[in-house]
Each structure stands twice: as C-alpha cells, then as structure tokens.
Image (tube, rainbow, N blue to C red; front, side, top):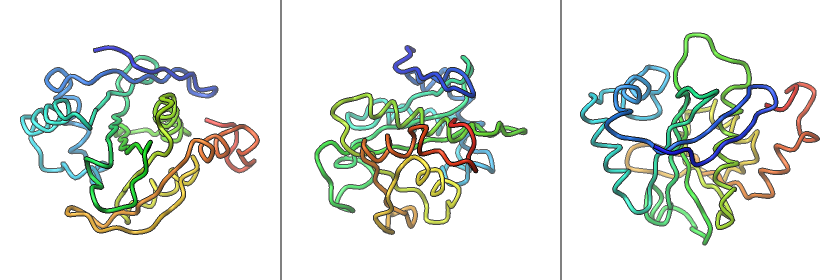
Length: 197
C-alpha cells in the first residue's frame, strides 16, 4: 500500500490517497459502504465478503482503480477513478479523449467537521488533474443526491443532464481543468463560504 498523492489543505491539514488493499481494508470499507449515510453508494446490503469481492474486481480491472483516502494519516474517505469509455458510462454520453470518471465517499462520522467533504472533493479532483492526460472529470451521481450536486458545482462541475443507468437515474456532469481551477482559486471563494477548504 503506497501513497500516490498528497495535498495540504490550508484549514484542515494533510490529505492523501493510498492504494487500497481489498482484504486488509475490507472491514473498514464494509462499515463505510453499508452505513445509512452511504445509501447512494448502493452497497447497503453487502456483507464483508461481497465488499472484498467488489474491490478485488476493481483492482483486477484494467480501467478502474480504488484508493483509500487519508486525513492526517487516518483513513477517512474512498476514491475511485475509472475510464468512462469502458466503465459506468459506456454508450451513455459523448465520450472525449482525456475523460476520467470519478466516485468518492466520505467515511460516515458522528460529528461532521466543517468543510471536510469539500476538502475531500478538492483533493480528489487535484489528484485526477495532477495527471496531465486528464482533460475532463466526469461524474454520474444519483439525481436525488442533492448534497453531492452542490459539492460538484462548488468545484466547477457543469451539469450535462440526466441519464438512465441500469442501477439509477443519474445526473451527468463534467468539469475541465480550467473550470476546476477557476472554481477553487482563492478569489472564487465567496464571503459566505469563508476560507477556502
């Protein structure tokens, strides 16, 4: 398990992404993905063996990767990167070279930390755009997941429109490098949002 990316957040400290071990991380991931707050992850009824199987499948897939996110050195979120020409969105949208798909999940906690989820999505997006081959990030959250739609908008995503997937009605959205940088540079943060996180 190696760290593949780190980002220092002005308000919340160090965030990092490391490779995920389907077996060693299974118990932790099972607690996250089956939690009621993670309903949109669509693994509510999975047992630990099914979680291992799912993340083994992702690890073996040539166009899909999963990473464990760390905050100040402790596991705190999950991130997935995929090629939408081969996974999740095949034939469902106008794919362009340089498109990268993304999923993220924050670990459910009893007491939320202000600005944490926004810091996580900024970290994940910075990681994806650290690869010069990434031109756009593409996401397809559930149309009902209004909290994630707001987060996506805050980091520069533009809504393309609803699409029908086998498991859900999704809201396809895209974000270019320029859109991400414009949305997250300090001048773009409003007084209402406070210090960029």
